[in-house]
Image (cartoon, rainbow, N blue to C red):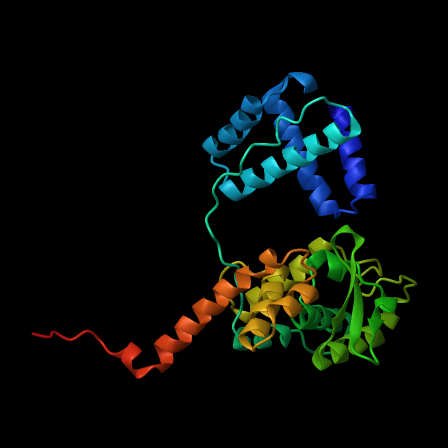
Length: 296
């Protein structure tokens, strides 16, 4: 079974160009699946896979992670069946666990302004951190996309960048003026590192700043700013999309900017916008403020 997993992971890396983070997650999921099943490839049936998911939930795994593991097993068997390694696909007709509808976390305008302005003062680190925060909010990039940006991907004169998203799909994303200014400052300061790296964002040693490093930067400044709750790069991506929608941007435009392959993925922001409208109504409408009085 291990050989088949290695083939599958190689396929994901080479053909699908998935991120290292996704590869690690899929490898872990399939290793967990093997430990539970303990059977030959051809002997695995639908009941075995259902039992695996049920056992995961019984152990306390949340349904979102269990659903992801089922998606991994499905993708694995789809690959095996297509390549002729197995005669059947027992995972094909298994439905996902019912998931709660969780709305993504986003920041208020005041909070996000305070966050991106927190890195200040001279020096490469402050300039880099400010540029990362400004770009995350200005363009709604994924953390992997931020980490993978090259200097040549940025068109400072015309105010846009070229992004390589999931599955190597390229898209053009505009950059706000504040993000452009922050990137200029970052590039001016990075000369002190004397690095020949072509990546835009570097660590202290002059090497590419990885995804974990970007996450640490966002978490660090969210904590310093005093923003409560769990905040990371994805929170700024959600904030970018939500603020655009609240300002009247078309959902199709937001889909293109975020690099979503399906509009249904982008439509979750309509739920956020409804929540926002209700909140505005409750605060602004005089009847909404009235307290219930005893009426006889």
